[in-house]
Image (cartoon, rainbow, N blue to C red; front, top):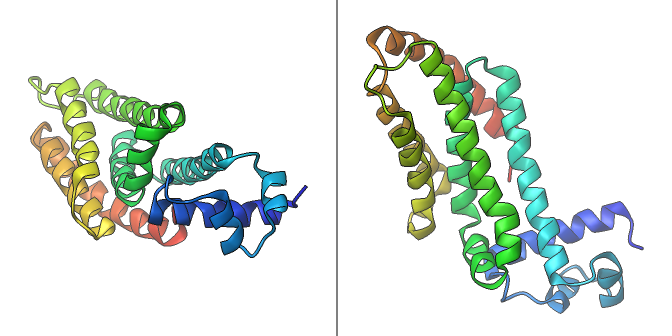
Length: 214
């Protein structure tokens, strides 16, 4: 069996190739050739392309979850953490748009295992954040939390058909739109408080982005 370092190198290389050329456009032979590795070594590590693709998506998921944990450890406000994860998901979906589209079309079981679960996790995180601010009377009485969450999630999903090439800039715009929408739901006192917190949160985001990559 290949050692752990070999396995990591295979996964990183395959992820990049899948992302650039599409899952169907990359064969196990292509991956072995790119790594200057024998096909036997590659197949001793991963039995087939589906198994390797699953491992690639597991890596992306682990990196995304790590961002969540780091943000949660440095920011006390659940809603701000949820908003950061909106930004992270914007970057995630835009960068891996091709993999998302092809797994949905050609590998639906793998797609559901990762991307549907990923979307459900984001919705749960947003609901937790919105429930927190609602329980603390930060929102106007007429604010509709479910509509707000649908808006946020749909905005993220729309990136799959976006032609915007700069994922960081696009993610920033997504976050700005979400914050603008959210501000419209808040009471005046809450707006003053969140404006103060957001300045600190921007510093946290900058550090997290510098420390993490997908």
